[in-house]
Each structure stands twice: as C-alpha cells, then as structure tokens.
Length: 482
Image (cartoon, rainbow, N blue to C red; front, side, top):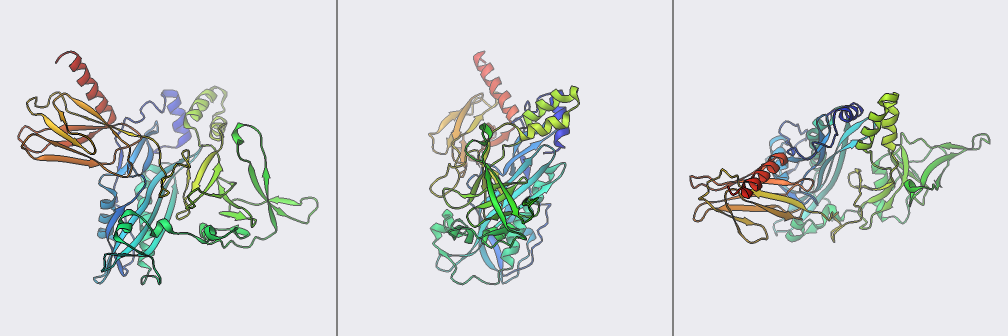
C-alpha cells in the first residue's frame, strides 16, 4: 500500500470507488539486486535453491496507488533463480565451503491494513541440506523467520523485508560449524519432493501433553514450552457473548489475582508479552487481545479464532457518509471493528507469522493448504498478425491446437505449485516456449507473437486491461466478418 489509509479512503470515496481499477494492473515485480545481505562467511555455501512453496503463483497481494487497488507481487524471474542470484552475489563463501541445497517451503509477503496504520510483512520457512556422496542428503538446519515494518508507504518495504528474512536464514546457516549429530538423512527422492527436514520439525510445545504455566515473552519461549515466571498469580477467564459476531467462540481475558479486597483482579497487560498459559491452555496476544491457541488438524501449526478483517470498502462508505457530520475518524474506527463474525487465523510456528485463514482446513496429504479455485489464462494473436502463418499451440496436459491471426483460446489451470508450459511453432520452424505459474487472483492474458522471418514464436504477458481490449476487438471483428 502506498498511501496513509484514512486519507486514501476518504479521497477514494469522494472521487470514486477504490475498487474500480482493481485487477487492471500488471503484477508488482520485486528484485533483490539493490538489497544488502549482511551474512558472515561460514563453512557452507548455497549452490542450489529448490522452490517447494504450496503456492508458487505469487509472493502475495499488495495495494498500489491512491485507490489502493490490489495486485499480485512476484519476482520477475523464478523464485529459486532470484534467491540463488542474490546469495551468490552478496553472501561471501570461503574456498573450502561445502555445497548446500536450500529448500524453500514458504517465502511470502503481505500487508496488514488497519484503520489508521499499515505494515509490510514477510516470512521465510526453509531448510538446508548437505549432499552426500551416496546421493543422499543430510538435514543441516531448518529455519523460520518473519519480519514486520510499519509506515506510511509500506509497499516500498517488501524487497527489504524479503532480503531480511533471507539474511536471517543464511546467518543461522553460517553460524552452524558442522552437521549436527544424529542429523536426519533423506533419500534424493524425499529431498527433492519436500519430505522430512523442516516439514517434519516439531517443537517442544507440540510434543508436550500440556503447556507449561507462565508468560511467553517471545515466540521462542512458546516454541520451547519454556515460559517466564509471572510477577503475580494469574487466572484465565472465558466470557461468553451472544450475537453473530461471537458465534462459536468467546472472549478470553487474563487477570492477576491479588489480596487487595478493593481491587482483587487486575487485567494482565498485553503490551509486553507474546502470550501466556495457565498450564491447561495457551493464549496468544494478537492486536492487543488474548486468543486461545489450538493445534491445526495436521499438527504442524496453531490456529485461533480472531477479529474480523478490516473492511476497506465499508470504511470508505462510512467515512464519506460521515463527512457532513464531522465524524470521519469515528466512522473509520467503527468500520475497522465492523460487525462481521470472528474468523480463523493460523500461527506459523516456525516463523511466528500470523495469517487470516478464510479457507482454513483445506489441506492436502502433505499438510499444505489448498484452495479450491482456478486460474484463467487467455492466449491470443492480434488481428494484425501474419494471416498465412498458423502456429501450433502446445499446452501442458492438453491436445495441440491451431492458433491463427485474430484468434484466442481460454485455458484453465488449477495447480499453484507447477508451471504452465506453452509452446508455439510454425510447421518446420523453431519452437518458442513460455513457462509460468499463473496468477490465481486475476485473469492472465498472453499475447502469442509469430514473427514473419521464421524465428520462434514468443509469448508476452500483458496487463489485464490490454488483454480484455484485444479479445473484445477480436470478437468484434470476427462478428463483422473481417
């Protein structure tokens, strides 16, 4: 997001809907070339990066412009190539450094939007594997890192945040003097498929029958089930509420228990702790409130029922309506709290990142989240293309088809982990191919260009607005018989 939210909401509401331009822009491309990786030389050197993210279609959504239209952010090149380039360019390696495979299970960014603030967030979950002479791999180190940076124009922080979590992972690797004793060893097939290592990592809090009683001052204390001692005795209280907002859950509060008869219960401050446990249940502090943590169905992370998401459109409508009454701030704050129901959140235990999970519960056999949706891909040739040069279009998992000048075809893609491959060829001439993971948040338009000089066809990803215009023009001219 690139503007201070309340001001944007008001202007957008006065001069036009903030959604009117949504999904009309190209993705925001991010690169790490200008970012500094401060990593000391160590005994290891990353020589290969493997992208094992559950969703390879994008790094995450970002908001751009005065109207805060949502676009996808991504690297201009495949993620594995981008990270390896940054590591080999900036992270020093000794001549005798041993090669390491870096497996990335999560590398993502997001923007946390609230009524009067916003923040850029990034996360990395990965592990490092040492290749062995017998084609096996030894797990050296699983890592998790997350960072958050607030400001008035947080979109500019995304590249820095991504570099920071990458740097944190590389620093942990550099500090590892040797392979740990009794390290897990994986077959080549398991290593390349993403099994073992970080995916099988379990923290003490996950292995304990009950959490230890005390205050968690940090994520690490929660991971290790090693809370700090509180200053005073305390108790947790659940307060039931009626109404749609609280359906299926209740409010949780924590109180110090004191001997002062006039003030026997004092609320526990939520500003200097990560969470707490009474020995039976564990709570996390999120947006200045306590919420009860429960293990996810796959046992990898924790989940909780938390506050509704900030509704930008409702805030805009209320702010504009309140201008005449002079209650802009109150309107925005009211919209931020909203009347929506509580929603599921997931705590990524390896990194500490908290994410709203509207689709929580949809996981595959490996525990990765799945979302039952599809990406739409439109491939077309402009009407101005050479009409005597028909191209054969080969598409992953589909029969070849002919694509002539002034024609288009629609493809459906449902795999967020695998690339869609398209190849174009004029009979007997060189073949040109393009591979990418489509964006699932908006239509994807690819122009197929067939040169007249006999060189290989090429494909160009175009903005949504341009692609829609070209398809309408093709349809219009086709109806007119031209």
